Image (cartoon, rainbow, N blue to C red; front, side, top):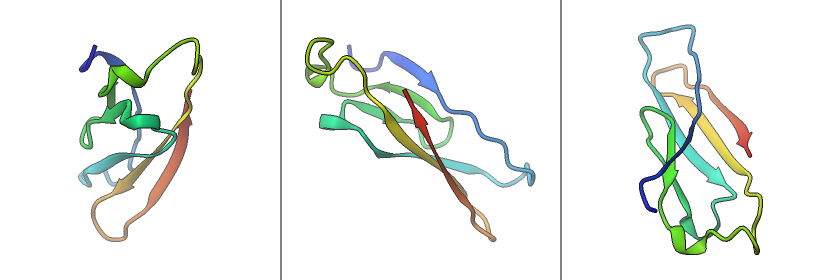
Length: 79
C-alpha cells in the first residue's frame, strides 16, 4: 500500500553541518516510489503500477546533494 517503507539511502557529508537533499532521478516508473528529501527514506507512492509479473525488479537512481556551497551531487542505484 501507499506509504509502505521500502528502504533508506544513507549518505555522509564530511561537513556534517551541511544538510543533504535526496531525490529519485530515474527508474521511477509510474511514480511508484517517493523519497523523503531530508531522510532518504523510500516509500511506495503508487501501488497500482507495481506488479511482480510485469516488473519483478525495479532499479531506482537516487541522487544526494549537499545543500550548501560548494555544492556536490552524487548518484547511486537502488535495486
